[in-house]
Image 1: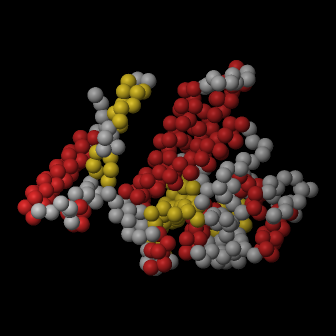
Image 2: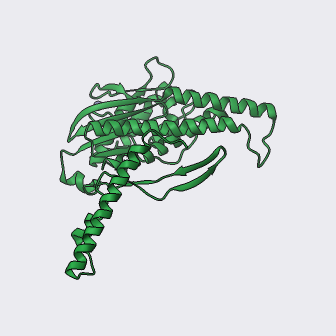
Image 3: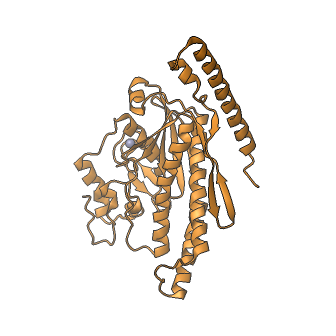
Length: 347
Ligand SMILES: [Zn+2]
């Protein structure tokens, strides 16, 4: 029989807690018999519940797998939550909050205490993203060679397994990195962008499109796992509408221009024409989620949106073209800006 290295300690902890509860129950029963009571008091019932932070094993489940049988043992742990996120936001102005921007190749987090930013953290996963795209290219190549897929029959099984496992472990890795950082900085609420359904960009190859789709799914998976891991530490997770967060200047909150440092390729930088703020667009998106959390985010006016669309209409397309497949963006950033003759209407 094999098990994870941390299992003996967990089971020992669980056993000690179960023995404490059993001892407490016996003592209570004796006392109740002496006093002639049939019902437990509130304090007595509370004493029978597991201690906060202690892991208690539940009924094991036997699972048949290809290579044998697995025993899964669920563990339960009591966690103290100090009120709802929204109530705490209003009651505690100095609440430590983290705002996060999830991307295909990196995750940026910003930590806040009140209005002050106390830290920025970047978690990169570009290499895993490349690995996935490479595996998907192999799938496409093999599929082309073998012709049309047979209905009801799985093809490239081991490759798909590899991709699934890659995504699964990556989601855990990112989530755990986020929560470890949040615990280290004493954050109590984590704010993520609310993810909308994925809308693919036209004109991409199957493998590239599928890779983007999967990396977008991955973000949902990461948030789900962050919720779970954070709750163990009593940290809450909330979502906010991300509209305009990757286009607004984090200093003056007016619309800024996205550009790529080399002049071509993905516009990863953001420059503000009003205040002169220049920086990474992903960092700006994480910073901009803070006013969303505070509900003080200033949305651009119709005129500002029109003005921001002007230079692109004039054919200076480099700035916006790469931002198109950020589905979380505002409608203005969605429209593909193609050749010189095309108009790019910010709907
Ligand atoms: Zn600005």
